[in-house]
Image 1 (spheres, protein in one colour):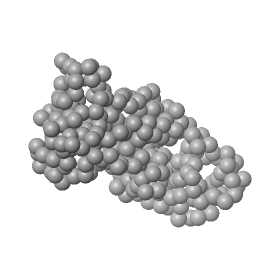
Image 2 (cartoon, helix red, strand yellow):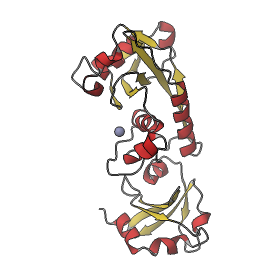
Image 3 (cartoon, helix red, strand yellow):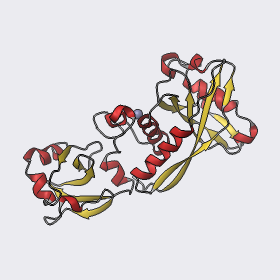
Image 4 (cartoon, rainbow, N blue to C red):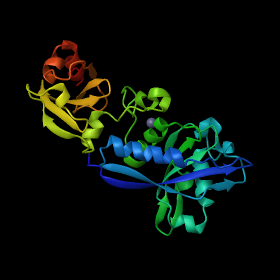
Length: 269
Ligand SMILES: [Zn+2]
């Protein structure tokens, strides 16, 4: 995976219609951007470009068959197309190619392709992909869908990280970070050797301590609850979380005190 740095512009487009006002998504978009900057230790910050809200003739829920996932044209790909087509020329010129669509409607959060191949903003510049969110979507839903839209990260259904159940942690208001496998691959964690001398408290949140165990690359990183154990050859994880009570204890002694910990991290092919 390539290193992910700098900022990535994305459009925020609120959609109303049929007497329903477009929602104000400013605070959510800003919070989501700040969350990514923090979780990447300042390496990456998605930059919201707030577009003028559009008002369609129909209520946005007109396009919400199956939560927006139903058969076209009454689905969210059709809503995305109608919304982009409704942008005034001045907004088309500044509109990023990747769009977060927010509507006060029962949309199932998702990322997909704009109907009919997309919409040309200007000659040669197209909006082809979008994320759709209901106005009530919490932070975890925002940052999860941003990972799909802006980073092309896949769902990891068995993981407790952001790309799995972690998006819903704390009712979606306190999402879990992406797994160490993803953050390490993005270049957001500094690698240090997991030596016998390394103490649990020595490990900084922006570091990952690594060792090779049974021919597999194992990484240890800080989590709120303790130390996450990841297999850096396998997406997903963490495969174990060691809760830490003594931050002056050697990290490896702590990890190996529970024999199942490393087994869980290495049992996968
Ligand atoms: Zn997803």
